[in-house]
Image (cartoon, rainbow, N blue to C red; front, side, top):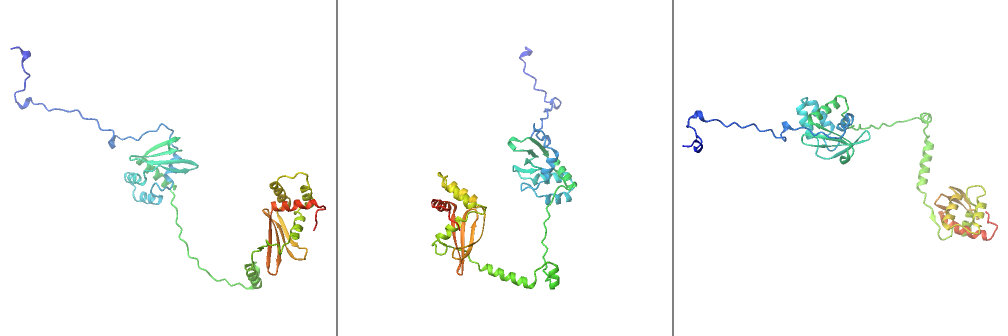
Length: 310
């Protein structure tokens, strides 16, 4: 019989002929915790000062400093602190300012990512394991840089009555009893003051009163002559420019004013308007002129020189 056609031996059935199958050990998965490594960024590393400043900064995206400080004081073990830090941070992209630098962080499962600048265009980055985060927070606590706001409790104030003699009041620069009574009366009188009534009818402030007030000119020397010369020109600027020029010429000011009939009041040019006020027994009456209206009225006066005077 040709040995090449013989079937392969199946063994004798003896236990000694049975060989165990030995399998090669499989490589451990890269996703298992023991084989995990923190990603390394190609960017320059974030400076240690910015890292500490960012970890010390209060934020709504992580547990407050008071709770962190309390936990670290009660748990010196690094593993416990690391697990605590991991659950302190929320998985939220957070931006903060540290020493005029925009920095931020985001929590990952195995590490904390910190960067400088906008996340998409960041200029520096560092990824810290939770052990490293715990160690740096411990450094902050040791250096006294993990600040905890102090909540002040308001102290109830007790009011005590202080009685001073007239001599003591005078030494302290306080008003006398008589002066205080006078001040109270003046305050009560001021409270009764009524806002002047706008006299649109011309009953209390006549057209002649308005002309007299306008022809007085502004608060500067020879003002009325400059106004007459300006408005007597052959060609005048547009009305808005005339109004602006008159507003500047009259300036900011005013004072008491005596009307032709002997009545008293005030003439004020306070920037926006020119105001004429007459005081009567019934109260105060006021006429308000916009600068455009002042220009319109004054343009009619130089046509009949000399310029009217008061």
